[in-house]
Amino acid sequence: MDAQAVIETAIVIPVLLALISVFLGIMVQVAAQQQMDAATKLAAESFFQAPRLAADAPGTTCCPQTASSAPSLDTAGMPKGCRFAAETFYGTMTFRRYLVFPAEHDPAAHPLCRRDGAPVGPARSSYIVCDIDIVDSALNPPQGLRVVRCTASATLDFSRSPLAWAIPWKPTIAATAEAIPPPFRQ
Amino acid sequence: MAARATYHCPMGGAQSCRCRHRARGRAQATIEFAFVAPLFFLCFFAAIDAGLWAIQTSASVSAADQAARLGAAAANTPQSEDTPSPKVLLAAVRTQLQTALFGTRVVAWCPPGGGACPAPPGAAGAAAVFASCPTAPDQVQQQFGPRTVAVCDDTSAPAPACPAAPLPSTPRCGDPPTVTVHVIGYLASLVPPLSGLGWHAGEIPIDVVATTHTLRFAP
Image (tube, rainbow over all chains, first blue to last red; front, side):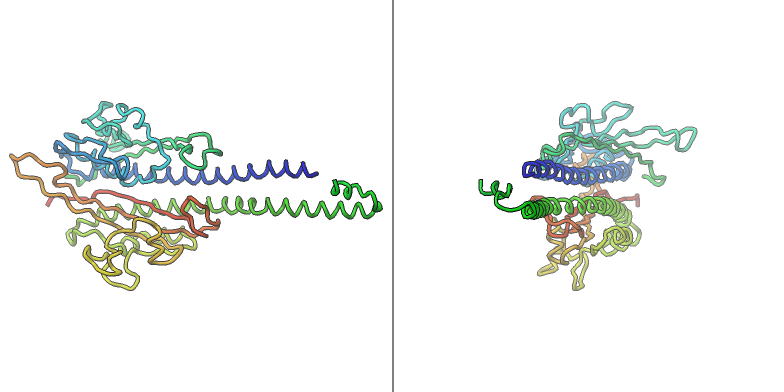
């Protein structure tokens, strides 16, 4: 009887603790996903808050990867809207403690802005990638409307947290947002 | 060995043995219950709390997002170039926040006793705290008490104008200011404190930020 009670307890307690850890893990994932959705959407919209033909001057940089690090993106010669989008994303996506962005492993594949699939300007290793001047033919048919589509993704790495023992997998979160130019844009 | 001898009841009758057996079983069940019940209830309330928290976070992210858009759009109108005060932003998102944030007070980051809001940058005394947004949920708790969430906005200084041609433009010249909205504080919660996560008894911290550039139109 004693041994049975000990075994029962030894089984039930870790299961309950694992359950709590998974709850907390889901809370973290929900928070990260919600913030990424909001940040990507705001970033796509803020592309159009820059004057239409304005480009960044030489020496313009932005967007430190951490609060204490140096700016990580060189936006010289790029459309100002690209930097505005990046600044909005980095400023809004503050929940980054357990996130690993793919740009950290493969900077070349993650330019800040692309046009027709080709990188625009020198900014690489960006947490957000915006495709500019995409023709969305669903809008304003038949000629379509030139829109901006921003995408972001990251992996939640729980091995950096106390929840690692219960959540060995690494869920991926992703967000895509499209913005159309306002009709009164300069 | 003594315990084992008692268990086998060498001296007592069969009735006394059954009695001791039953008492021992009850004690064991009580101890098991004492171990498992708190964990069970923790799981139970954590499950409810996780659901509530997801709703509350979603509402806060959405409110910050909406307030940032409002701040960006309202910062450049024929009437004013100033970003709306936290009171104005809160009025715009109060309904959605208050509906979702059960048991939590929602306030604007303004001096509780009244006065200028936001406080001017050089403000002295207690008002100085309100000259910029709180950087940690604890600051909101210190000013407004427990289970309070504050809405606050900061506007960056405008960038210098670009030099006239033929001089080359300088980095960031002519950029409009950025508006940053914070929804920050402690949400009411059912779970007891968990060490290491910055939780207080009956509270979960929240710090949601939304940043965007103000809209500028040609004069």
